[in-house]
Length: 149
Image (spheres, rainbow, N blue to C red):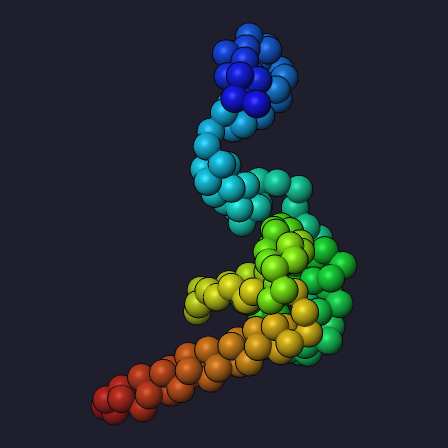
């Protein structure tokens, strides 16, 4: 395997400018942790195939779960919820299963949740509601502290 990888790395520059093979081969030449970081970064920075976006009017866990399960990025106000690429993980019995995480992001915070299931979506909605309440309370305190002239 190592010989094949080095052969790919050696031949990657000769594949021509219009081809995507050199880039793929160069990424493949990196050690496994670096490849994983690049793959996650590419997904997060949306340089991979962009998921369709579903806007929701209310913070309803059921509609958010349905959208994430369908492969969509779900947006509520300025919050974005995305399902991560599948990754392998071991359950309590030691069996390896492929799972997806939920990434919740906004200018008000970021938090990953370990699984794409209704319970994690409920936790994500609670996290968003708590952050919104905290930001609203902070804005109210700042408004109350302004001097009256």
